[in-house]
Amino acid sequence: MSKLNRRHFLVTGLAAGAAAALPGTAHADPTTGPTADPAAETAQGLASRGLRTDPFTLGVASGDPSHDGFVLWTRLAQEPLADDGLGGMPQRPFNVQWHIYADETCRRVVRAGVTVAAPEWGHSVHVEVENLSSDREYWYRFRVGPYISPVGRARTAPHPLSYGSGLAMAFVSCAQYEHGYFTSYRRLAEEHPDLILHLGDYQYEYTKNTYTIPGGNVRDHLGPETVTLANYRQRHAQYKADPDLQAAHAAAPWLVVFDDHEVDNNWADEIPEHEEDQPTFLQRREAAFRAYYENMPLRRTSIPRGIDMQLYRRIRWGRLANFHMLDTRQYRDDQGCGDGYKDCPASVDPKRSITGAEQEAWLIDGFHQSRAQWDILGQQVFFAQRDNNAGPAKVTSQDAWDGYVASRKRITQGWIDAKVRNAVVLTGDVHAHWASDLKLDYDDPTGPSVGSELVATSISTGGDGADSDPAKHPYLKINPHLKFYNNQRGYVVTKIERDLITADFKVVPQLRQPGAEVYTRATFVVEDQVPGVQQTYLRPLPPSIMAERAMTADETVRLETERP
Image: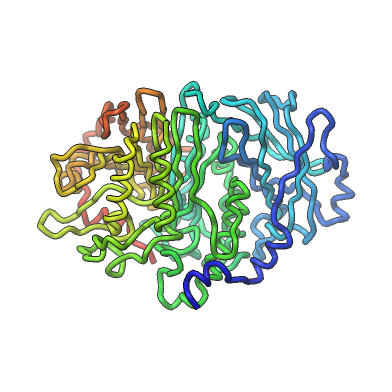
């Protein structure tokens, strides 16, 4: 059977169940109230149907904002870490009431309704709200009987013809639960951003004592390596139960895309990391996609259909910015030369793609249609070239865009031909902060810069890491378009204005105990119609660190790629 047929006609028990219970949204007129009132149910009545304790253990979230609405999410789970992935919930639906408020004290209701948390979808709730005012804050919460969820903050984008009042946007990546506390999520929530992008590796698939850091892991994963729907549901619940992650979700709407660890390390389309896992990989991928949708604030356009999921999409923040959210896993060709860092002939094969032809055409068409001040690509893996060999060989990561050179060049040429005003690529994956100029031809370091790349370090993956003098990293000498490196944990906060993007590279020094403070390690700006990054602040190094040896190329490769 052809690959095309398998992608479109594979049907398993999961897909068959989905047809009978696709998640929906119920709306209600705020002047008349919802048609059914879950708040009227008593604790005794709920207990008689198997709901005996507070089911809002996984927090709340919002996502994918438009100029008149957003998605609201929660998932009912009275025993969130149950091995069967069902969250201790009975196999029956429950009505869930939702309210949206104009004020933080939750007194002025502007929209209300009832939706259904169905067992077929892990008792998750996705409410798509419309007809709200543009460019303003809202607050929301859910209710079932006497049980009331935490309050979340959401906001709408500016009107399509308006630039709005500026945008405080943060982006994050790579949160390995076992490697440290999620303090960076907590500190990010305290920044009160308008929008948060998560660029992949939201959760990790390994069983405990598999992916370890020096000195041992801080805490353990529950359950086996995630393979089944029950495994993935349990793992998502373990992460969502973390109070620091819940705080970040409640702070602002999120735009999410997955990378590899939401399924399997370094998977590519229908190919798993290990060849021996191939016979069951499609079932695993289907289970992972389903659990991902159940646990993320995504619109119904992203409901998985068997092994397929529509994740790439475009979010418009008025005239100020277009966010092109990419999927660099589901459609890519297999990594060349057995993956890893290689001088690989396959990396320059013009037929190879990291996005697939359809997504590439969609992206380039979006460039041509754009009238935004900033076109921002939210995506997973390093975009700029990173050669780690000072000699004639070009040794690069085959899992990143370096393994798909022609694909990168077509997309870069696409935004040049479309005369995009400002192209900025946001990246995760590599567990370190980076900043880079983007080139059409990286073999000509004197050629013009045509865009900018900002890379967020991990939330926790790799443990504490260590500070160093970024100027001494060998990659920056081999690749003069690379401008900054830091191997600590944290996130990036940006302020996006019409004439300037300001990016603060935030660092949390230690993760073994909760509650560490955060500081700004460096600040870079991108000026309107001036491609490339410019450093405006660099925190001085303590004398003890200044005397330490610099990070080597081999250490950088090991920290990025060392997996079980």
